[in-house]
Length: 389
Image (cartoon, rainbow, N blue to C red; front, side):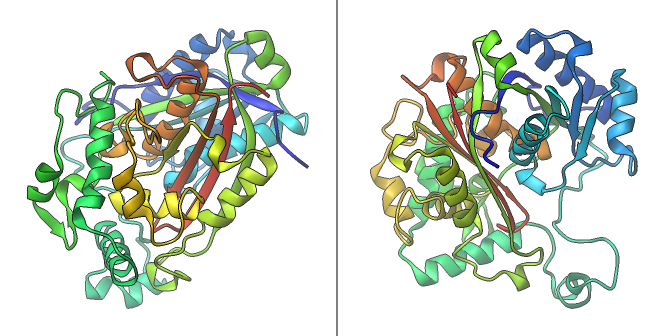
């Protein structure tokens, strides 16, 4: 069954990322972005008959029903998606599949992450329970948190292929340039240069501080509707193709450190969409670290394996360039409000396709590629979105 053109994103609600969200609950923040998304789509609250959410600590069990109760919704389809940074992209095609099957017509996809000063602990990518492979054989040797994993991936890539520190840094610089056109970006008003990136603290060799995402608080929501309803709305971002691939959890079990599951996901998305890579006007791809962007560009097929460094060096990745990437600033400069950070790549693509990106609007943007990445390049979801079905 093809999902091409059966559903579209018609509304977006997003909070401006902030360093702290003292006193805000996850449910409270979800309610805020959900209200904004419904208003943006121009729908009445009662029209929402589907709900897709992600895990959060406030409610460890029966999460969809807890959110539905809080929002005053009664839905005919509910789903909990747990794909790390790929969750936002994964929500979209699942909502489209539910719509295609006739279960619902208007789905709310929502995610929010409070961040309080006393919390101070981010995602580690590892299980907290003992007697799992990573806790038995990796934790004791310091394999904790996400930084070590992406540093190892970067080191391996640099061992196998040609890649300079300056080439990685250009990804961060171009995305920070994009953020200067986005008043909601957490680093708005703070441009950087390649020298700034290379002069920032070396956190874990070879990754510098300005190559690493900064966790913050925030939330995002989308309304996904049937194509029939979207056409009546007139302004929408249609799902044309989708692909998904999961290969491992622990870095020790990764089939490869330099060839990711993105290839399978991206090939499926482009095949079902029936469009070529050369037709894409925006690449909105997960960027927890600069190395993740480089791997994504290669494995999604925009350049050959081992050529990403030269590719980004020879192309302008800004909103006005010849190959725009993460025009909202990416998570490196927009901010990473938990799993809603991954959703920001979907919302930005939808804004560009709807012509709502303001000062950073790409001219004639009719096709966008989105990729969500969870874990250590472990969980991948690719989408091709278009301005028409």
